[in-house]
Amino acid sequence: MSNKWRVLVADDEPAARRGIRQLLAAHPDFAVVGECRDGREVLAALDTAQPDVLFLDIQMPEINGFEVIRRRTPARMPAVVFFTAYDQFAIRAFEAEAQDYLVKPVSEARFAATMKRLASRLRAGGRTPDEPRIVVSTGSGTLVIPLRDIDWIEAADYYARLWVGSRSYLLRESLAHLERRVSGHGFVRAHRQALVRIGSVSALVPTAAGDVAVLTSGAKVPISRRRRAAFAAAVKRRG
Image (cartoon, rainbow, N blue to C red):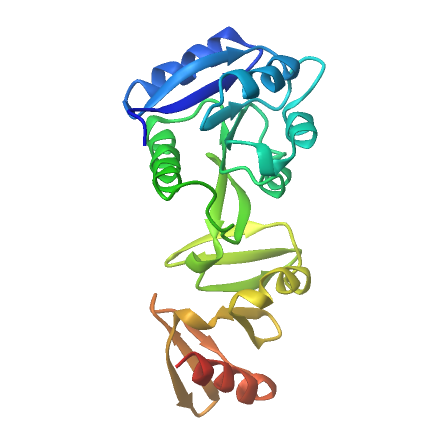
């Protein structure tokens, strides 16, 4: 690795570019090698500056951030971190293979978490396998939750409630639709209104009312009689 990883900053607002520089000052392994005000400048600078990391705004003159990636293609992009004032594009950003999605203004702690992940990826020598994630909106902004961190999911009217330990997050998506997204990643139906990540199950306990899955978080999720055999088989396969 060279002494520093090269960073390109793209935002049409000078204050935003200055803000990223200030945040990067706490991370000496990264050095800004260029700034861009619009998409055309970004496309040119990707060839001339050859950055390892691109902080990319979405709403820019002429060519927006998503169009930059489309024209360049994800395979030819450096590690991309979207840095934007809009939280509604998070899902689309990860579909474009972004490494992270920061909503202005971003805290130093949130920025530091992003830089830690970037450094880990770059030390590994480039692109890491995509980790399945779900994007949720919270009162403090957008949160990206890896599926491996979710213990179980329950239906909540027109929403799904994602449980991560003792914390929960609401996602405006039906449990049936969400099941199609997560079923290939270790989640199994426990009953009509709950999905459980098999990796979070510490024990299956029989009760008078039926089996209960005890999770590593301490949560207890009942297993319906209809789902009992398939659920137990999934737990056994995992060992």
